[in-house]
Structure formats: C-alpha cells, structure tokens
Amino acid sequence: MFDPKRLDEIAHKLAEALPPGVRDLQKDMERNFRAVLQSAFTRMELVNRDEVERLTDMLLRTRTRLEALEERLAVLEGTAPEPTISAGESSAEK
Image (tube, rainbow, N blue to C red; front, side, top):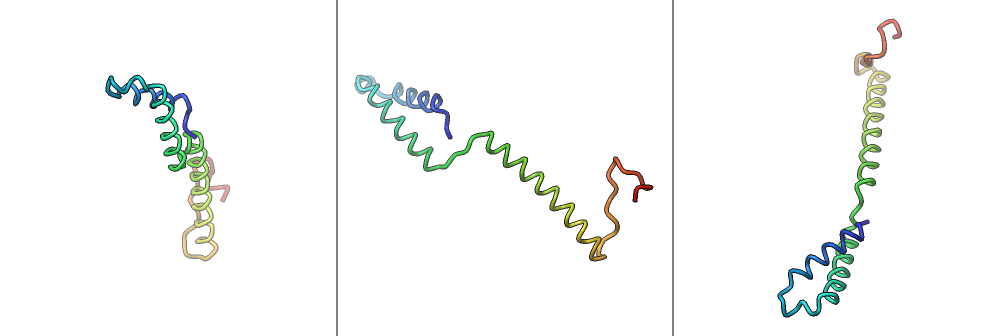
C-alpha cells in the first residue's frame, strides 16, 4: 500500500497551500486531505515496488520456461531443428 508518512507529507503540503484566511483550519484540513487521499489511493489499488519487482521476476521465469517448452515441443513435433546449445554445453554433450 501507500507509505503513511508520504501521505501525511502530501496532506500537509496541500494544507499549507491554502489561503491565509483558511489556515486557521489547517489541522482539520490536513485530516480531511489525508482521508480523501487515503480513499483515492485505496480505490486505485496501488501496489508497492517490492510487489512489482516480485511479479516482474515471476514473469521473466515464466517467459523463459515457456520459450524452452515451445522449443521442446517444436523438436518433438519435428517442425524445428535441434534446440540451440547454450554457452555452457559442448557439442559432444548432444
């Protein structure tokens, strides 16, 4: 979710931007801004960077596995040449 400290910082900056006559209500406005921002961010269903990185890694592993399976299937069906040799393998290992 969204960092609460960052949310407080944004609410405080919004309250500071109010005209001088309204600043008497600054604390109340900060609370209101914070509630509105919290609600908006919750509706947006934001995720944190760790979650994005975890999903990116999972996608990369899945893509790699899919490519290997597609290559294997093509060889089994006889529609493609032998699989490519990775840098760590020698031709004698085939």
